[in-house]
Amino acid sequence: MDKSPETVIEIASYFGRIKLRKWPQYIGTGLASMTQFSIGIIMAFSAILVPQLRADASLLLSPEQQSLLVSITTAGIVLGCALSSVLLRLMGPRRLMMLQGPPAVASWLLVALASDLRLVICGRLLVSFLNATTLSCYTMYICEIASPQARGLLSAAPEVFCSLGLLVGYAVGAAVHWSHMALALGLLPNVVMTAGFFWLPESPGWLTAHYCFEEAAASYRFYRGEDFPAEREMQAAMQRAEKREDRGSVADVLRRMVRREALVPILLVTGLFVLQILSGMLAVLSYAVTIFQISGSSVDEYLCAVILGCTRLVCNVLASAFADRFGRKTLLIASSLVSALALVALGGFFFAQQRSLLPPGGALGWVPIVALILYMAAASFGIAPVTWMLLGELIPASVGMVANGAILTVWGLVYFAVLQAFPFLTQVLGAHGTFWGFAACCVALAVYTGLLVPETRGVELQDVAALFRRRPTPDKKADGTQDQRLRNLYGALPQPRNAIYLENQAVIQYVRRRAESCTGDLRTPAAN
Image 1 (spheres, rainbow, N blue to C red):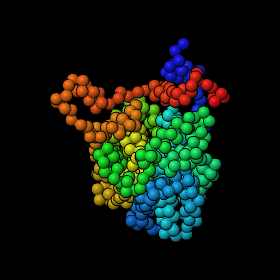
Image 2 (image 1 turned 90 degrees about the vertical axis):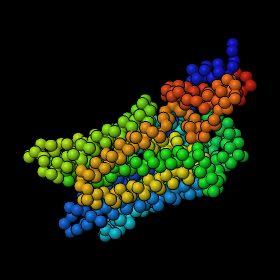
Image 3 (image 1 turned 45 degrees about the vertical axis):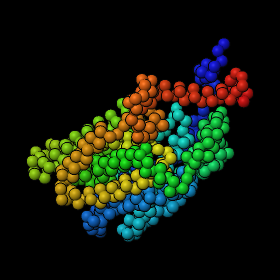
Image 4 (image 1 turned 180 degrees about the vertical axis):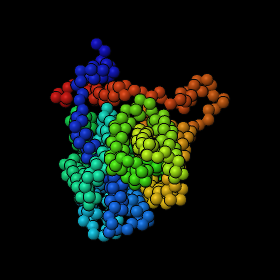
């Protein structure tokens, strides 16, 4: 009988001898996604707070105060993202997410119990700052604890949790006072996250980067199962540590960031995040109730906001499957173009409303609702999830801690500018001009993606990194064999692989490592 590694691997895979534990990965992913659930609550709270304060006869809110109440959260995001890289390197993703919970609870209590508008603004600034410190670490934590077979599904969980938090926030805010909403929804996710992470180990990737190899091996076995070959991972980590590929000073990371293979994807992803904000999706979510109010629709504005939240949640759940089926680039282009069409229709409605061209009786009152639902569905399929997906796939791991924080800082600055300017844009340009401007940015995002963004579906991360390296010019005097070798090395990208093939390859690679460590036939986990 042939006892080559390939034969032994196939037999072991077929009979299921190698089984990795997944429930700790699901628990860790759920707790890490609570950070995004809190972000959804913050966005929903922005949409609920201003209309309820405007309805209070004892308060007279100026346009400047309204925009400050909404945009102050993005100022906290900028500050939090600027510090997130430093905190992540010092504390690790799991400890950072756990320790931000108690001060976040105190900040929400400040908002809920505030007797003055200035205290509300201060509390919202602190809440957004604390949540922003975790924006650059939850994706890293999930990717490090997840097995290859479950990584795609688990990586989509944070965006789903964000949509769930948005939907819950809209629904609760429509039924209760904003202070009660802050007290209930502000405390719940932070308490759950802090209590849950207390019992979980740190992510293995951060531990190996800090030379804690024994703790990293224990972490691998906790999240993947006792049968996981942690020793092999530790040997590779030690080799990387000797070459100082995983760790270095900030100056070392900055020197790596100016290299072509790091600088090009950083600039590319930064452009994607800027255009994502300028497409208007987050502005629409933050001002959803106000937008429905000025549309004059007969449907309750809070119910419309809940419908938007439901649409975003359903589309985010479906987006991960569509991204693997059609590819990131195709999905992002299609999402941007459909979003532009929906915004053009919405702007046309407001233009006709301003010019008194609408038919009497509110016969077209359904247009803004349908246009916003179509826009939210399209944006949630591509613009929202794919940009965050590309952040993890295009940025090299060697510069990820610093580069992600820098990208998200720029993202937060543009986010702040858009939210701060939205009320003034609707006054100066009108609602129609504002939404047509968002539509133009959606078209620009589609063109930007089509011309510059590479397709990463089914491509290994090391192959994605090779896209941005400078390719040498083949020697014209080289023989045909040399030319063919160069074409094979620097030619077309690897063909996309389906999910089943990738899963089988992951299992085969794992069993091959186990088989190579055995002197005879493959032994069962019990025999090991």
